[in-house]
Amino acid sequence: MNRQALIEQLADKEHASWARWMDYLFNRCDLEQGRNHFRYIIPHELVQRWKRQADTPYAGLSEKEKQSDRDEVAHILPIIDEYMKQAVTAISNAQMKQGVRLHPDAMLRAIEEMT
Image 1 (cartoon, rainbow, N blue to C red):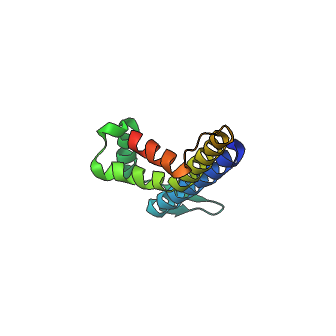
Image 2: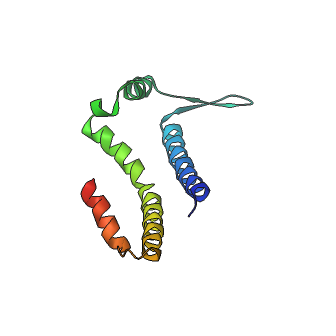
Image 3: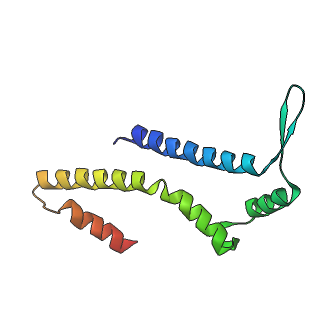
């Protein structure tokens, strides 16, 4: 996977995350129907809560709020994992061409141990 393919896959997941949020938002709004329009009204208590969350750094969020962000990140981790595996394989192959033998799994373990 090249850099552009990585960007496209991550952008696809970002769009899916945004779409889930919009569905969530619209399902919590009050719908006002006019003659020629629909109007979604966000309840005041939700505006207050989401404004507070938006103004709060991640470290200051509740554990439940942090978990919600972690759940969103979990959607993109498989893409990052695949990109890392391909990068490690490319490095390993380059090393083997130069006579160095480090298996890709050994590189991944070293990266995991480092973090």
